[in-house]
Amino acid sequence: MHQLTPCERTPATRQGGFTLVEVIVVLSVVLLLTGIAVPMLSGYMEDGRRAKAESEVKVIAAAMMSLNKDVGTFPTRNGSGTNSTLYSLFTGPTMPTSNPFAAGHQWATWAMNAARGDLLDNHLNLNTPQGQSAGAYPMTGSARWRGPYFAGSTPLDPWGRPYVINVISSFSTHATNYKRLWVLSAGSNGRIDTPAAATATTELSGDDIGLMIAQRQ
Image (tube, rainbow, N blue to C red; front, side):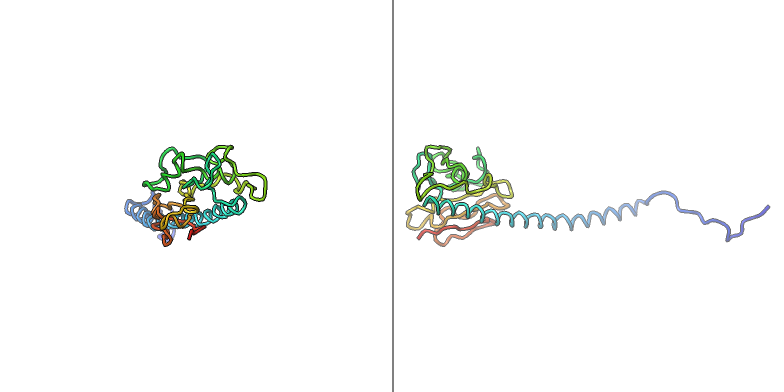
């Protein structure tokens, strides 16, 4: 009977899966990489949202400037057709039923007020200030509404909240307040940090994102 020489013997092969130590090591590496990657991805996503908001405020501002050029006023007209009446506007297709921001602010309060607020869509796209066709901007003559001025409904910001436009600053006669007209997003914290008075030296505050489109003397 032939016996296998040491060279002919097949070494024993390792059977079975990972050891507990190996599993722990692999999980530790995965968790470490996840801990590094998630904040980086979150940061990139937040940068993307801010860039989108910066782009959208410019587009909204351009549409408002076109309306102003055509009819001779920013969108401050109420449902009865009286200019210089509205104080604040929201973007988006519908008026929120409750404060959409993380804290109260005068501009948001005005925008949701039946007498002082409205949706920007009613002025740029529908020509029905405060939802009323009776208050429409003129459709004939040299100073007439030539809209729609926006492709589709004006957007919510990347965090799902309305952009705010403090149109009171386009006509107020207050000596120091309401000097600067902004198109503004509350940013990631959901709170409007820019002061409501909007004096001649007011700048964007906190993480607000906006564009000043007019300054009253």
